[in-house]
Image (tube, rainbow, N blue to C red; front, side):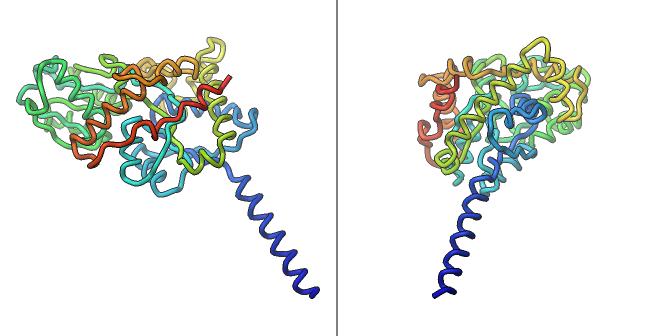
Length: 325
């Protein structure tokens, strides 16, 4: 009888220890090299998460690797574009966008080789772009605005991080890429120039924090605190008294000088939650994350990135943003 009692007690203690360990595990968030996501580095360096009482573990990845890690269950959340959140969900890793970090405002570019000065100059030319990713969509929008279509150019599928070298080699006449690759292309190829950018179509690309539905359901209060920290980090970046320090922190994360990093910030419209709420309303078109995501979904299906349209509303939960004070 005593043995059974001791055994039961030991099991109860072990169960309690396991439960406590599970509860105390930090939220695991993947992030990568984009100004709207590197902003998290300010919060990390300044211990802002500790100030609001939430335990997080940020893990640094190359962008595609971060999506793979999220899809394999290694992360609770990942920093991703709204279009790629749909791709990730359609291929099996369901996610919910709970925070709009920014929209691209010039950092995503179609960069033309020397002599290519407009989108119309691309007729019959080769364009290197990672097919199915956001700058493929940017290219299509650029063509559409100039009375052209994808049939007017020859697409060459190139990983985004290889686009600068491909442009420099002369294999293509233009590339579509985001920073830092777009900036590297401009530096590597004298005479090259941006002929269309995300500043020409604000809202085409929103950058977000996407969380697994399970983690969101189990840790909703913690995620609300993460959003509060986001506002603290953006405030630190925007405050003239601390802006230089903030930029230095961000630049150090990606191995650039603060001076060089300032140009990246100019092409990214980083938003606090109050401003981001303007884009969180249901509407058609690029002025809403719902409308933008619908356009991305149409693009993804048309380009066979995935087969069936995704239920947009199930991917977006702006209620935590609305609750942050």
